[in-house]
Amino acid sequence: MFRFLLFTIVFLSSCTTTPQPIPAELQYITPAEQEGSLATLIGIKQKGVLPDDERAAYVLAVDGKRVMSGQRGWNTALPIQPGQRNVTVAFQGGSFHTQVDLQMQAVAGGNYQIQFSTDVQLFGANTYCDLWIIDIATQKPASGIGCGNLVNPNE
Image 1 (cartoon, rainbow, N blue to C red):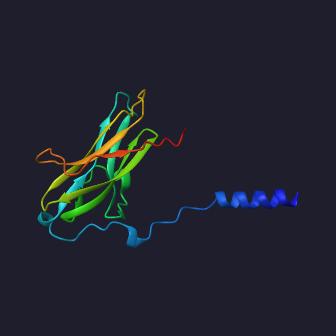
Image 2: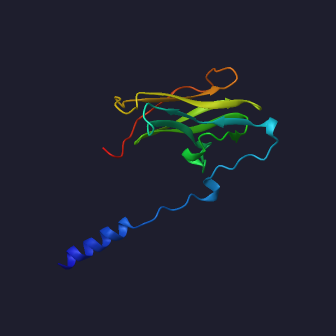
Image 3: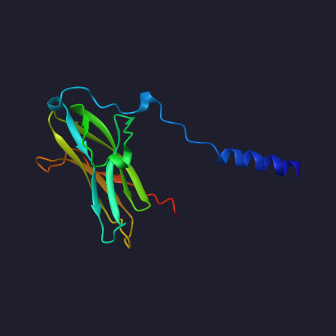
């Protein structure tokens, strides 16, 4: 009986841990340079047939630093330094999600947007999600395509 009680206490105490906040040095800080000397990167959202059927792609991290606005900041242009950037983009469609790392060459004054192609939808196959970044002015790719492995925590 004592072992069962000890096991239960240990098990329940491990379930009540709260997530630790991300340390400040691992959080993305918007560069302080003048507006024209930076580039911007923005996410995208698509609505489906039903009101709750939305799919969004957004910036999760830049150069390994976590963008704290996450999915709620999908439509806010994120200032980034020009040059070679490593960008982690995330996709959320219903309960399905994924993330991929993309490399891009950002140009000062450039405006970029995440794009995606997926079969995630209400009655879809839910098998893939490709993500990439485009230059908004030219509509041409600014990164390669990242193939995300869809995860559904409800399955």
